[in-house]
Image 1 (cartoon, rainbow, N blue to C red):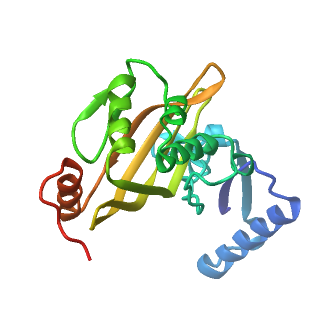
Image 2: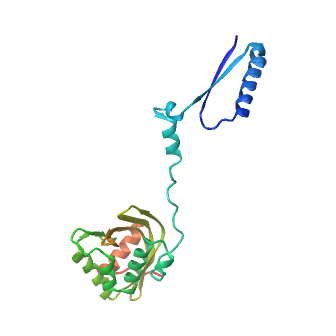
Image 3: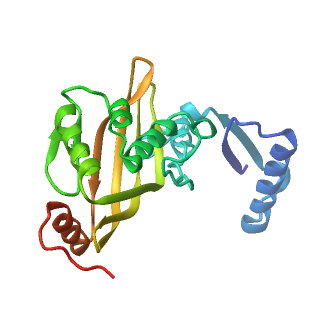
Length: 231
């Protein structure tokens, strides 16, 4: 007497589907092994996904892992500082404030954007790590009060938020201009904001330039050396 045991997960297999499995398995034995369908037994076991494992983990765990959210897609918007924060997701408002302060040369707004504490940090493409608000403030003072004009905007970025922190990972583009010298800017940029007293305040910034020639041109221009002439 042929015996066929079919095991399926208990996820709503209908009576019609079970009947089709029984009929199909029976006919398969008739076609391949020439068994008598009248004496062929087909048994269907429904198994809970917690009781079935593959590769060292339950089917339940594997399916939950496969159904985890996909990585966030890059946000198509460009942040220049001119946007209306009310029209953007809430965390993005802190980014708008930063770029409004930077492109507007507004030191008071910049101070409001950053957490004015000793444990914040900033890495910028010119080099070095600035720690604490006083050191970071000095960088912005030199930029805002210097002879150069600098403009940047944020694009191709993603925002990742937890309860008390969010970070943005993306790119900046813009221009550094000093007299007749103009250096295009292409910077990989990440910013971390922490919720402090109910507000998002920036606590870390990192920027880096991949292109070594562009980095050298930017560093030379910022440090006041012999600038490259950019057409």
